Amino acid sequence: RPRVLSGIQPTSGSFHLGNYLGAVRQWVSLQDTHDAFYMVVDLHAITVPQDPAVLRENTRVSVAQLLGVGLDPDRCTLFVQSHVPEHAQLAWLMNCLTGFGEAARMTQFKDKSAKQGSDATTVGLFTYPILQVADILLYQAEQVPVGEDQRQHVELTRDLAERFNHRFGETFTVPQPYILKETAKIFDLQDPTVKMSKSASSPKGLVSLLDEAKVSAKKIKSAVTDTDTVIAYDEKEKPGVSNLLAIYSAISGRSVAELVEHFEGKMYGALKTELAEVFVEWVTPIQQRVNLYLDDPAELDRVLAKGAEKARAVAAPVLATAYDRIGFLPPV
Ligand code: AQP
Figure 1 (cartoon, helix red, strand yellow):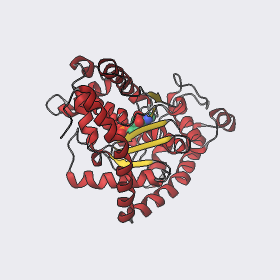
Figure 2 (cartoon, rainbow, N blue to C red):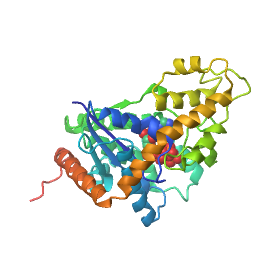
Figure 3 (cartoon, helix red, strand yellow):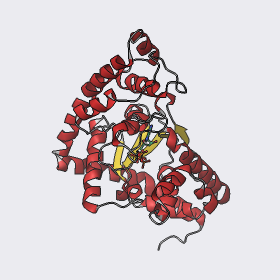
Figure 4 (cartoon, rainbow, N blue to C red):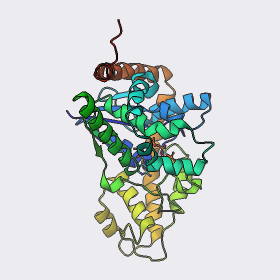
């Protein structure tokens, strides 16, 4: 079975629809066909300030959500990044192989640091794509299921794997991004030209999985569309309507073409109302399952202990090989 690896930040507690449709949904289906490693990336979360108690709580909520949407610890390896110290260790090696200019070209860093201003931007935020490189290479992952915004980081991973292999001998698998075209980028409901993101300027465009379903339904019903009236898929001319169709299609399993036919002759209001209903029906049982996991902290601990053990069994020998290849004296 080919190996996949991916991670998600525990920064806001609830995942949003972009996280789910762009990445996590694929994680669930890949469990059956791939040797899958998934983690909650708490090391990445501290690249921006975190309240310790909130971070701890959000990490548990993130794990519960991953289980609630269908990850099965018997069919995948689910763990918390800081439980596997090899991530930070391999990241140092990768830092030392990365050019400063190369890191400075990462568009996510440029966007986020521009929003924060240079005094609030940490060196951790600057090097976080390199930690991500280590995350992926530690598991010799062949594919990395992510949203479009992460493509550049997977490219960096490929470059660094090749650089390491070239300088020190064949060591790392060079991974491929696994990005599904239909849900590669889910857009903000209020501004369908920018990606749905938890750091959006207005919360109205963001649909969070754990928000009260009524609140999300209201946001869907007030999504921005356009002045035309025809329900059709056209990302350029009709970004708002196309985004709603992509979300509807992914949640319901019905193709966009089928939905366009279904809505023929109907107004935008019909699409929004129906999608709001479909969303509430879909998210309610997920929220119930998440709550069940949150009510059983002992079970969450068991899942994470087992996950960390399985992850370390793969990561430790890979790190040891990299240490050896780079010329570190073996510990005596
Ligand atoms: N809008 C999106 N469409 C498709 N995929 C998306 N992802 C994020 N937004 C979209 C994918 O979700 C996975 C987890 O990303 P993350 O850990 O970076 O999550 P986040 O910090 O919650 O993402 P945001 O909202 O995009 O964060 P900020 O506001 O910090 O920029 C990744 O695979 C990502 O591609």
